[in-house]
Length: 342
Image (cartoon, rainbow, N blue to C red; front, top):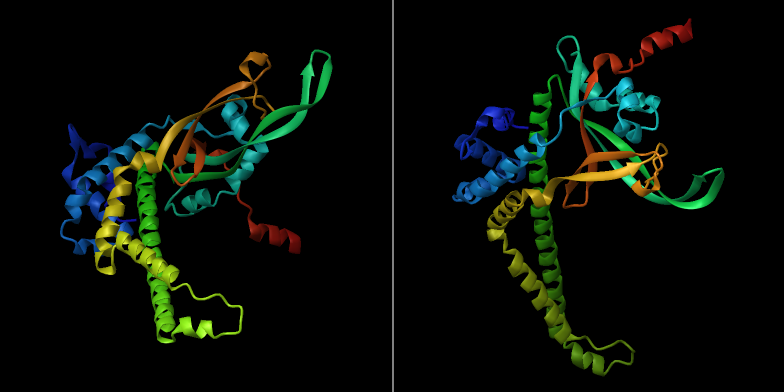
């Protein structure tokens, strides 16, 4: 992570009518450094990336600033917030997640002094809906094998811990911008790999065609007593032409940097396509079963926030704050060993 990112998304970097010029310049350099530094050899890279970078930076700022205020992630919060009761099976489960978080542990270990009173960050998790058969109360009668949809939340993660909420959000913006660069790098790498594979295939096909021509396979097959089919030189030539066409579309090795710059600009110019926020609404009872509002049965209407990517990733997100006193004490292995050894 380059140092300039510390100020890249600071609250005072925006100016009326647009983004600060120096901010865009720093973000452009980060985009190049985070994908392929060789792009600097192209004299027009700053001009070609300027508008895409502006769009990406603006989107990231809106994406993170649009998140709600942090809510308490605590025992008391679990009792009063139906979202936390849906996310965690029990209060003990919540404590287990906090106690087992490597991110929180490393954050605390990296502090020079005493731990802060509160830790801010983003809680995210995956969710899954599953069709099941359950029981349902109807007056004094219990119905069995009733089709239901249960919702489970799993793979909880805590991201971007900080002593202050604005510091945590700054880190989230940096992560979101880098995520777009990661997707661009994947596209660039995939294209280069495909080009290399096509070049190897082209070489193999060319050698095979040359061998067929040099060996006069047509006559050899005519006098052969075997059942092998005659080589299809026309089909082989057509396949070579198809490979060459794909290579032309990808661009040759000398034009690879221009192609990479285009792909980087394409991702940054469509940030809302690659990474976006959307509302996720569901009505769940205390067992995590989806309930229709017309049923009249007790349930909670959950207004959740989903983070989605074009690559298919999706997670529920909730800004949270954790009191230091809520974190379980980490085990002291030296004391445990001393008690064991007497």
